[in-house]
Image 1 (spheres, rainbow, N blue to C red):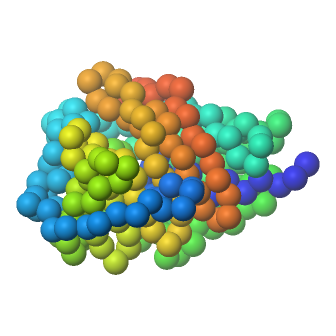
Image 2 (image 1 turned 45 degrees about the horizontal axis):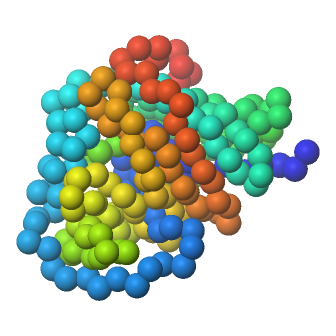
Length: 232
């Protein structure tokens, strides 16, 4: 069987806000022409609008654990993935053609176990993972962005948070994150689903490590089904 390397960010996309800020992205096709102008909003206002659009900061902070079930399509194969999160800890298990792959971070260290090959999470990722939150959006730090611009893509306006690590496009009409860009990979949020009054991405088109991945969320469980034992 051809070995499938699930891009690192496919797991951390659901496990750390910092990694999401570093690894989300542009659409797979050639980027559309855009014209950026300075936004009237501050980075804090853009982030506050995002948290409100997701369901409100209080509701987001009340979420201590999540279990997210996904179906990934990569290299023409379908992969099922379940990711458990608790604070800065996560465990992602992927299954394809009877083979299981695990990506785990216990709050201090972690590893990838793919097809029997186990490797530690790179040291340069660990510091960021330690800062992560159960809900990615709560990890956005207004001070980490150098500017806020407005860009039009196919006629729609987006407030864009810019930093040396990438760009994050928020729909000006809904406040929701649409896409983010960085050198490491890409992710475009194609839709959202609502669970207990909180919005979660329901479909993501991602690209990284030379692979294109379509991620569809089938179920999200809040504050249930996760214990410390999951991260041992």
